[in-house]
Image (cartoon, rainbow, N blue to C red; front, side, top):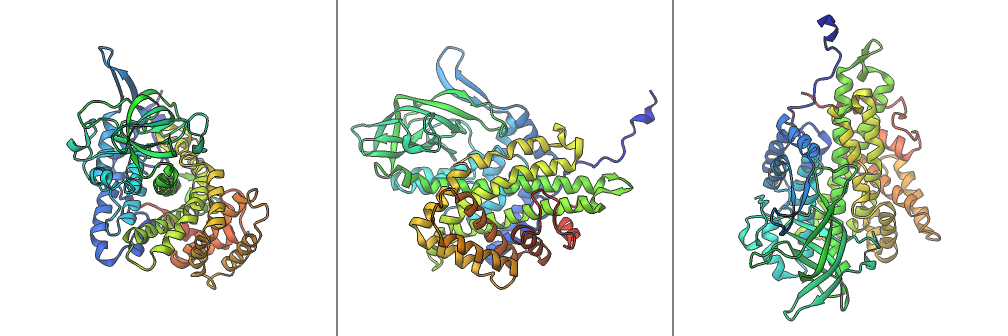
Length: 552
């Protein structure tokens, strides 16, 4: 066969060697908007370093390798001793170490810490999404630990450390730790009040032993886990370390690892507590849900950020491919219908990013707790975190699937990276409560915490008068909120409208006019179809696509 038949033409080069942070205008602008001026220079410098690493060939190769060589469970050593360990590919440790070193478990009590961390989380998740799980849970465990000051004094500094140390040792001997969470049981799922794991008090105050199981325990090689169990006074939160203070292993029997659709670099396990599993109470007996809800809310925000990262990477890949690929007489990016598809994808991505970063800024205001806005921002988070988690994670899968289609058959091939993004895309919708759980949580906030609705209306009200379609959507939402009859059956519809109105208000206030105009037309004004690529042709679609394009 003649060699000339193998000449490669009309193929896009790999999207590598770029700065993931500065190439994303929506993200870079959000950081500048939400951080105090005196923090900006240092934050930008750190995020540029992280952005260049996350777009490098080396870190992308680490992500590919960690997913191609998933973790393996070792229940026993060669002599038959129970060890309950999980072996990870070295690439997993390298990428996790880089992210911990960048401060992605260190937000609480740090000026601008939540915005800085959220931006970093959005950046590194585009290189490898699975390692976001231990980062997220370690970060989110801090507010729960603070319910028990003696525990927080020991564990919080180690959790917020910038040092990654994978070896299991007592916390006093480690420069940094990772923390996990184990709530779900076979019979209960999201209904954690149905948990049957039993906690029996010991003689020492606050110490217990656990008997039971957990159906999902993510990142099982973490140093400790927050666990819910039934104590004498009811459902209670506990800290379960993997290694006890004397250096001996706690009873933490890993039964098997889950064989998951995606998220394959990260281990998720089933774990048994045999009646000798030592645990330390966190917070009051019988108040376990209240104690752990701060952790749940923080991980829900990370679901939003993780989905936003997948969206951004998917649209970056799609626009990049279409900029280099020619068909029917010219570059795909110049074809009117393809431009419509890419613009619609870019619009969805930017809306998700702007919303996630606004919520991170609210966390900074609450964490500072010295400003007059703290209570209002806390109330805003109560309703907007579950609404954002519901909507952004729901939009992720169809958006990533459409971006894959932009690459055609190339996108269906593993080497493109798009199948990995697609397999990952449903995870955040399931993790920390699926869609119905989030929608019902929004309803609960409306019924029991009127300050949350007031805070939401004030937030969207800041954009009133700027776009007639947004104003009409706000009025329509108020009509729906005025009638709570049968609200549970309408909870998904209502939650969707809350998220869309909030996204529209934020874009009207802060995004370029062409972005806000397109969003209000298609998402709020009804001038868009059910599939991506159905934006009104009169919009400035070229500007949307160019804003999303990565220059390499």
